[in-house]
Length: 301
Image 1 (cartoon, rainbow, N blue to C red):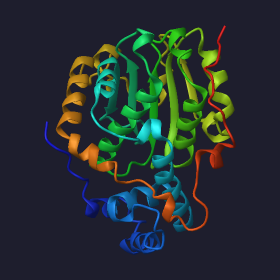
Image 2 (spheres, rainbow, N blue to C red):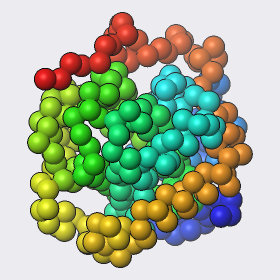
Image 3 (cartoon, rainbow, N blue to C red):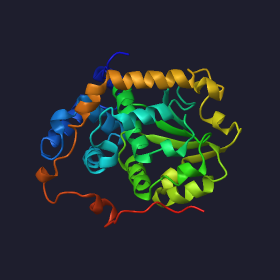
């Protein structure tokens, strides 16, 4: 498995004729006025990704760029000390992280996630998100912008014990990041093979979902073919009746990609905010969410 190659920016400008080098240069000039942001570590592609997902708006791009890297600094459970350690290794072996090469029927890209190990004792939600974010960063780095992005979560192996291991603060943070400043045009979140306790999971998620995301959230029943309206069946792994690789091959290739790019993952740790240099007042998690104590896990009947 070779090391990552950044998607060529020349091809980005071809893909997105509405984005000009001048647009990106203006964003770069603004970055120079923001001493707290990691401008020296942000590439032209990073700025294109931001500008693209912000509808080519300079002002929105500035806000999202600041929030994106601020949250990479404040949401430590997902972004601090990104290395290939035993916890990431456990996630890569117990969860399938599968970016699908076949686009959706609308031309968007999708990532397919499912449990490989059904034992809830091996499920640690913050580590699952942390590993997903590393995988996502590598994927986006090599492919650049997409028209839109779909998140597909297969609940096939999920049991109630997995839901009881979800922490409210972690859910809140991951949904905030996804909705406010992930550098994609999110087009949908799909839950496949909805289990009997899906209503309990939704009770935990709904307080943190904006109206727009609620409208693009789709729950597909067990053995239904309603997903076919969005993504052709052949796009899925073999075990799901598709023509893509089987689970074991996808898992092994993902682990190899992580190992081959351990240095790249480590270098990404530099792309954080220095709050001491922020003009005005330093930002904290409390600023985003109000004052919190440590949340206990929800008790679920």
